[in-house]
Each structure stands twice: as structure tokens, then as C-alpha cells.
Image (cartoon, rainbow, N blue to C red; front, side, top):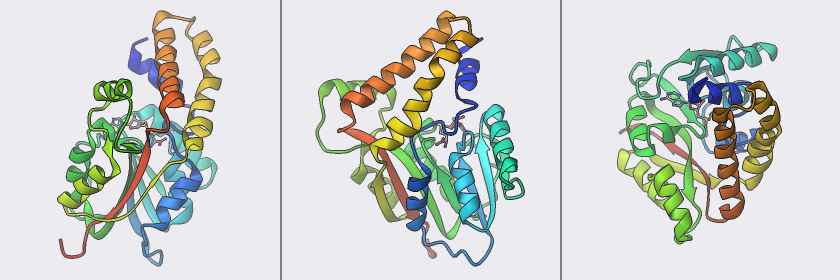
Length: 252
Ligand SMILES: C[S@@+](CC[C@H](N)C(=O)[O-])C[C@H]1O[C@@H](n2cnc3c(N)ncnc32)[C@H](O)[C@@H]1O
């Protein structure tokens, strides 16, 4: 099995594929000030197995295009949505976030938790701008430095993992330069990483390894995930997921 297939197998039955929580999704929603009196057109980009889509569908009227590159994740999302009677509101859609199949100015809300890094924050906020209606809102979470200084080893680690990591002020600046009006920013609490993401992940390691006969590739994947957890445990004071809420102004 190649690495991508192993990654899919490891994550496909998980509730989420990145740090977050229902409470923090709801918190971000409070900043959007969306009109809930009419059906909204929404998209959850890089939705994984649907952690955010399911919360949004419960809270907001209208439909959500749940977009991901991986059909296996969308299959799990489809099953989760129908088990809670939301399949008429959530439309799983296999597509790349770099070539989204939406019409110009067709969306009231673009949501993306822990996924924009795959194309890069600046490229993503620029590419998705065209799909938002004037007055539409973007909610996006992104790896963010918590302060202006940090240990050199940590800078080097992130320089190779995701060089676009930056301080919140840089991310807000990028949104402003693109034309968005920032409406809010907050940092996900550590429980979103440790309790909601890493603990369930650690609980899956043994089954995953057994399922794959402790193959070298499966062990390498688990070792990679363990290293990520160790870095977070050692350095969570310096980085986290920032959640950014920004509006496309009515007159852009
Ligand atoms: C870290 S996970 C976050 C998933 C989910 N939003 C969550 O918070 O649980 C990133 C997701 O982005 C998806 N993804 C990666 N590259 C993509 C692309 N080019 N287009 C669409 N989705 C992509 C992955 O398949 C994965 O589901």
C-alpha cells in the first residue's frame, strides 16, 4: 500500500482530520453575522469526513457543498450526514480546492478548517475571492505563530513543513491586501489539538499497525504522526491554529 492509501486508511473513520471542535466552529460562526432568514449557499473546502460541515448544516439554513479531494473521506461524510438526517443539506463534492467548480459570486460562506495550507494561505484566499458574493464571508483556520519570537529549532521545523506559517498580523494583512474586511481572529484552544485530534489519533495507532501487518510504511506513518504530536507537546506555547473570519465588502 502506498503512503496516500495508508493515510486515507488511517484517517477515513476519524471524526476530524485536524485540530478543532464543535464549540470553536460555533464560536467562529458568531463572528460571521450571516443573515439566517434566507437559505444560504455555502462551501466547506477540504472538509475531510465533515467535522465542520455537520455543525454548519445544523446551524444554518441552506446547502453546503462539502469539497474534498479524497472520495473515501466524502463517503464517510455522506454516511454521517444521512445518519443525522442532513443528507439533503450537505452535498459531498470531489474537487480540488485549486479548481473549485463554483460560479462567480455564488457563495454566501466559504469555510475551511485546517486545509488551506495545502495550496497555501495567500494563494487560497486569492483564488476563493471570486466565488464569494459581495457581503459573503470567509472563515479559514491556518497554522499561526502565537508570538513574535520562538526557538530556532522550531522555526527550522516549520520552515521545512510549511514555510508560509506566520503571525496573526501577517495573515490579517494578507486578507486586507486581498480586499477582505477582517471580522475576527482567535486561536484554537490546546484541547482542540490534544483531546479532539491527537488523543483519538493515538488510540488508532495499534489497530492501524495490526491491520497493515506492522509494515515498514505503516510504522513510518505512525512515527511521523508521533513526531508531530511531540513537537506540539513541546512547543504549543509558540504555535497553534488561528481562525480568521473576513468579509468580502459589498462594494469591492
Ligand atoms: C487536515 S485535513 C482537515 C479536514 C477537515 N476540515 C477537518 O478539520 O477535520 C485537510 C483536508 O484537505 C483535503 N485536501 C488536501 N488537498 C486538497 C485539495 N487540493 N483539494 C481539496 N481538498 C484537499 C484532505 O483530503 C483533507 O481532508
